[in-house]
Length: 123
Length: 414
Ligand SMILES: Cc1cc2nc3c(=O)[nH]c(=O)nc-3n(C[C@H](O)[C@H](O)[C@H](O)COP(=O)(O)OP(=O)(O)OC[C@H]3O[C@@H](n4cnc5c(N)ncnc54)[C@H](O)[C@@H]3O)c2cc1C
Ligand code: SF4
Image 1: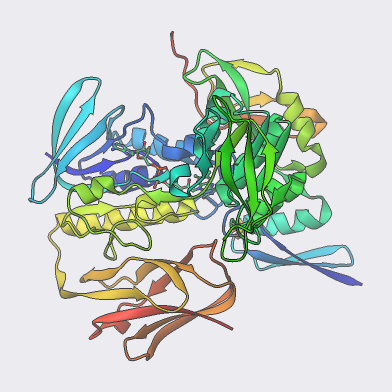
Image 2: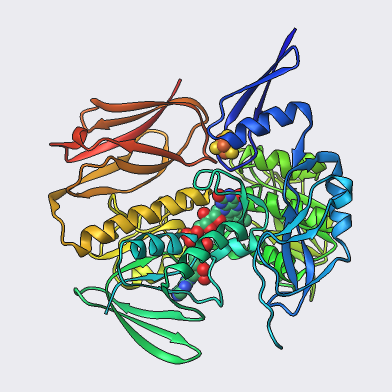
């Protein structure tokens, strides 16, 4: 038994049309233009996931919010849990891009990281 | 005197600066904001850089990669510096800037403009009614939410089904506004399918196609909008008016290149892209003045904007070295089913193929064809799927242009 799924890669604006074939548990992907697309195609049939991006409160920085994201995609049904786990989180500048802000967010096994450097500014 | 001054410190400006500084040229970047990065600092979602870095980064991360290179190369960066006027006609060009330190004149041999685009506002799409507080553009909302953590309202109406509108809808949904309604005049969302899926359908955000805001209602603050349905030609259908209560209206009705600075120095503009007319190395019609990124045309993909900047950097180098130009330019014109096309002409002697960016007017399987004025096909390439929301990048071989005065590009559906 083999099944074929078609969907659009959502990893970047290019929107490649992916064809994913599942044959006896083996998944093959066609139509991607970069490896992100191959990974996405495999995951979308097994366990659909999304990167979650949001912001947390930051003190002593140029802006009051620090953009953050999950380091890896998390299961789609965990998106709101991740967002809720970020509410009330307060960090202090300085922060470095890639720095872990929350470990294992909402028990997903994935960390939340800072998207940018934020220097400490004396007010 | 500088070799090159780059105006605008977004991804395109930084990319051009890095390329040229790596080759040893004396480069400066002028940026009016207090940091480099352009609009990427507010685009906190992921999906940037799959082509250049092979991974999907967020906007700030993508910018961060370039900011690091700018710093490493020791490029001169003028922040909080606004370009007031430019004298660009001569060999030595003069840029007059204003910053908190005062007025300064910077002399340079060449200029790359990379000042991006601006958002269209309600006056440009003819929304009637009062002018209360609570009407925003999508970009303003992105800044408010992502940098300051301020929500525009509790019940919001988003006007426009493009990518920016959809991305803002998702952020507002996740940040907890009470209700969202997206309206647009088209039959379906005009933006990329990926955003329809991951921003709207993933969360079941309500939307109404073939619907526009006719009027904004409210004295001091927005109290609601009057929605009206439209037909295929976007004409309102009488009897379908409806009052919809809301406390914020967010307009996401398109981006336009920010060309005022270029028309000031006499550069010609393409009415289709609304950006400058450029040659294959993104040089404008003013010699030694180049343009890159969203100022030339709206690139929905930052990687393509950066590629345009790399091409401009090649052009700057050719200009500074005084390389030879063709005796007369060869024009590249949009043909059948092409909405926009850059570059507009080929002006330099070179071997490399010409990189062009084109927005198709049709959707589906297609051939992209380069033909001459007599209709003879010079080159063609196949596309599995084209659509108006996706900019196509094509390469045109130089040898097919020999003896041609002009060529046309067509998109032909299968
Ligand atoms: C909401 C949104 C979502 C997007 N999502 C994606 C995505 O998922 N993936 C992707 O690849 N791309 C995406 N893009 C596209 C991408 O952001 C753009 O292609 C890219 O930012 C264009 O870069 P730029 O350098 O040309 O312009 P900008 O980033 O706009 O930079 C222009 C710079 O010039 C400066 N400037 C302007 N005028 C002056 C002046 N007079 N003097 C000095 N400086 C000046 C500005 O302050 C700014 O810093 C998105 C864009 C938007 C708006
Ligand atoms: S396969 Fe790669 S290039 Fe194509 S849409 Fe996915 S991430 Fe983008």
